[in-house]
Image (cartoon, rainbow, N blue to C red; front, side, top):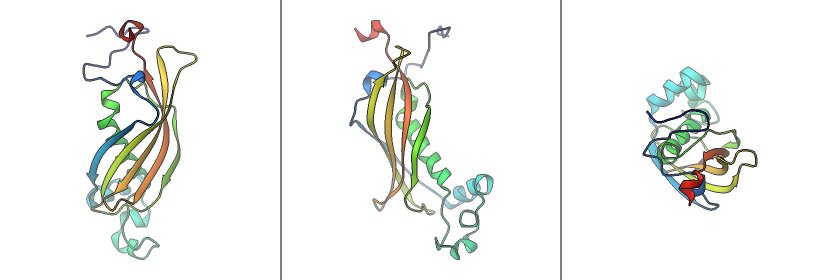
Length: 166
């Protein structure tokens, strides 16, 4: 087991993205996934049991005229895509938060969703030389190219050691 004592971290051999590897304007395609009705119903029954999320018949009588996914599930789908494409191969140190989370259009059963990330800014920490902050804009777009969700978030990433940078 690698030394992970005070001041040391081990991210594993799959890590190839450190703070220095992010730059303003950089884009990542996160891939796509299809949302199934059974997944939508299961999530909504557990976490967001509003009629337009849990009951197809009642959903027909709402302003949405049919079943739609919870926005929280939509955010979770984006997060899964972001993890698979970026975070699990990065020296991520977590996130201090998300802002400007917007659900722009309903997500319906069978929708194909494609995720993207654009790096908005990068800044080394003023208090911790071992890390930096990356601000991103994330988006989910349907197969019809219509945006479904957007957010802005911060992530902390480890910097390479001085020896690794030279």
